[in-house]
Image (cartoon, rainbow, N blue to C red; front, side, top):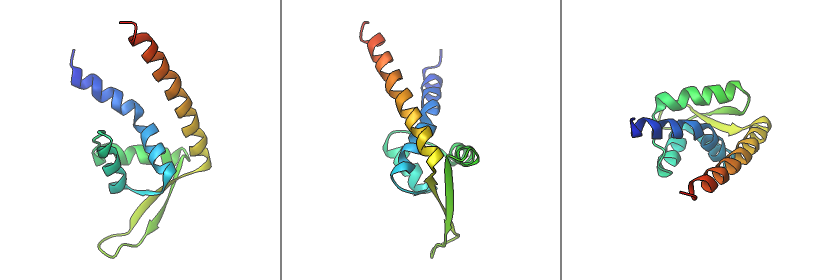
Length: 109
């Protein structure tokens, strides 16, 4: 069994939760979001991030606004919607239950 593949699948499974959590604190530009994920030891490539942001936007969990940039093309800043805040709260509750369960199970061994 490939340990790296398993770890990658675990990270992918919580990426939506992490993205919504970061954006809930302040609106973010993609490169800032990628840096925050990297700081948290979740290295994500643009090819993974952009489709996920699009899915979250299409699900009405995120919205965005364009801002002109003096050093290049306009930038798209993402912000969480009210629906996104409710979804994030559900994810937080699920995460707490899951981590408590995993901790309880794994501490026995």
